[in-house]
Length: 64
Image 1: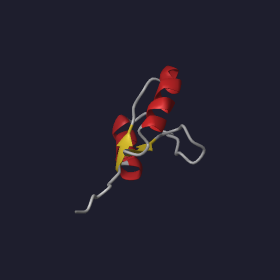
Image 2: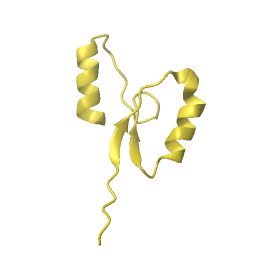
Image 3: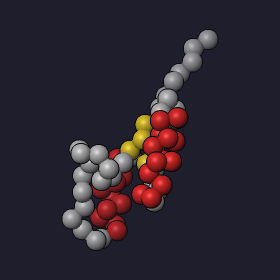
Image 4: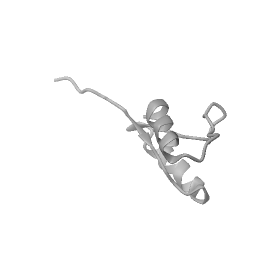
């Protein structure tokens, strides 16, 4: 019997005041999913638009 270990990409949306709890959650469950972020890490893209459709499209294309 084979066990297939597939991690899914997960985009987490949260209030940045909860950063400590989010970091713990990501650490605790990093064996289950691949967290994707926007504007948190050095290599994340930043938005130069206030257009929600454009922002959501960029997130879908580059993060999910």
